Image 1 (cartoon, rainbow, N blue to C red):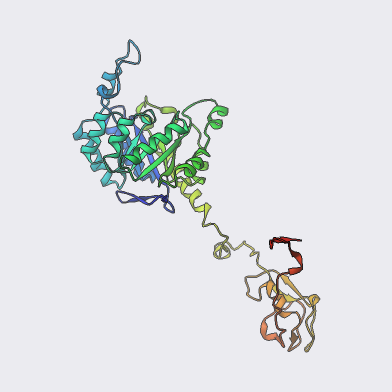
Image 2 (cartoon, one colour):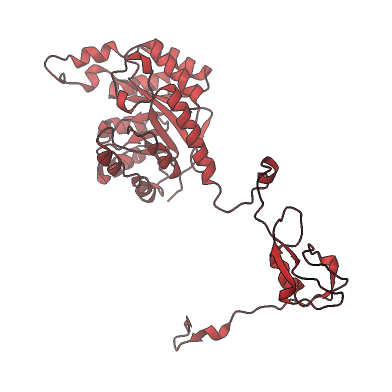
Length: 379
């Protein structure tokens, strides 16, 4: 059993207690235009993304027949694919813009191309989650692997994860994918974000990380995803004025991507550290802010030499002027005043003497009984 460890991809760290790795999925939305691909890489970097994901496919490697008699899909795909030289140029562009470019190889031929390019991470598309030969070959590359789950059962996901692990993969990010289309009831009803928790429970002890591909047309669901603390979120990006023919309904342009990234980072900030904290800068930055803190003051005029009773002191605002914490009332009750104290005067310890010794409080042992088996039970 092991806990998921930090994954290093380029100059980014992915894993627990790290910022969410935010990917702009380009896929093939560049439609074969090198200029569009370059523009989306640069736009994603400017929007604040950590990475971009692009398809690599060989038409002979993953198509055996056209989708329709009048549609030569393989020819279209070849026309919209990049050469190795173009890929290397795109990788240089990404590096110059401080963003990680990685690949989704759609077949074994393309997997080898990805290896030859030296991509720092690969993504396994959902239609390859049961393609065990490709998974075995991917594991052999020795780079981090992300894995989509669209349409996959838990047993298929488990088989894929175990295949990767058994073949040497040690850095795996299992990505739950939301629905790509549908009416609102279907879109949100099928999002099933808590699958990420199932994956953490099922595979976390194997060192597997969990992320999400937010595929819906929603403009807010990504923030619910972020609140569940995935290590990676992927969202489709497009050049809005390029006539994107691939997944335009689930893609956002660079402006929308920038807004989403900013708000996801705000969600991360808002989740905080798990324990309550006092915001000390509120009053400094907002002159209208009223501190909620109270301090101890005299509830009435108290003469010198009087032993303090509960009715003599009270907690009131404002606390920004300093004073005694309200819980210190226990310390003052039973003490004697060393001078006269007027009503509503802020109290401090120098006004008192002869403080009572605090009582050490034991648990109420009468609330418990011991039965014949020596088990302590509540009475």
